[in-house]
Length: 604
Image: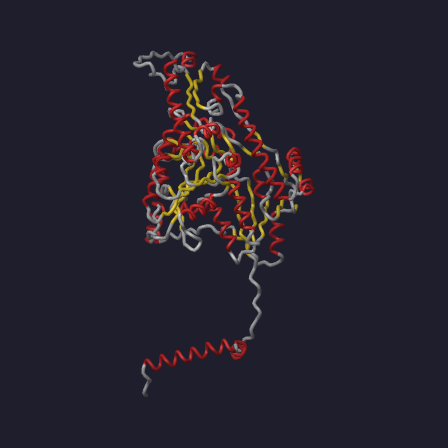
């Protein structure tokens, strides 16, 4: 039997497929009828809700590479969840469970803005809370609907500052505090040198509380369609039961979580509530030799088959924690920002030709004046647009490293400013003598005891150290004036160690605009000459240590105590907070000059 050539058979097959395809398009009903299968109306797809829980802390840093990095929750990752949900055409809405996240005013605003941006997509977001503190409620008020159980309460207790003074205790122990400062508002040393607030310190703190309280009242009033007077009265009431909260307009529905989910399910058992929505998937199949290699790569932070990208990038440099010379480190009571680590990250961004602009995300109360200046200098050498995004706090040294940027964003509640210098020590000779310890001192030079903790400074030592602080202050104010393009005498009047909220800083031109990290990234993209049509990637710096380095890199006593401090933070937060403050003061007191913020604000 003769067979047609291969080319002819291919042509015949192609024509047959084409004829079948066109017949299906022309008469799909007939085609399905021939098969005996009637066309059935498809059932609409089930509703899908992202189930997102806000709890714990949200560090501002690049996630660690590998397995642990995939499971680490950072602020950037939770913001990405909302952005993904905003763009997801198959998503019906979000159920947001709020479990007292430990966030500051800046981070809180980032989360609120992400929720409000998501709502512009037209999809709903439902906030469920068992009980609500002020921070919890501020987050919930950004949602379409607030649901709480009948046993819950809304606790809008207001704002409170508790600033501890140790002077009387030190007197009883025969310890003599010794402190110097530049700027009447630079009050970081008042806790050891005074038994109560100075008039300047009180004036500064009253203004901060007024700014914060005004923001809280305005936010709740606008979100819940209430008057500011009504919100003020609710806060003065303090605690609202569910019946009261419903009458006050604070809560939309009194109900339990399962009742909310049942209502959204509307009888359709296929409705999905995705608790892992938008999260990075982790491959945990480590079977066989390939699995062992994969595990080792994850532990070492190696991402297989990842090639260098030539796509334009915006580098995001995270500058978080108290500022110290040397490398960044994980301390007993929080992370410390090392100048060496940040300088290396900035230089890496500067040398990378694919990086077109830099966003410096600052969340720091300051610290070493020297370390701050080294980081500022590294940023000054970058010949690319630099935009600063301030988080919860960017004060003192945190402002120092920000002031050379092309554009500065602050959150409305960012604590910033504090342009001033302070140093201090405590002289413990009296205490040592009480417990039977005597000291013989041999010295050369009139200023040898300037940083000794044995005795207070003598007249020559005080004059020497004060001159150093004056020089640092002049450098600080001069560079700030140049960065903000204002006369030095005008800037100096705004300095003097005074602290401001982001809203206040905008009014006096210490920042350029109020906005979030995403707005700062958009501004950097614009300054780099890139448009929405350009595909732009983000490069997060500094690169965090691998899981292997985190586990085995530092086998010192501090590392061994990490688990203890985590337990202490959870079980005794008050004691943990006090120890954390003491630890930070001890670390920073080793520096000759400090650009350090004097206090913390907590929302109750």
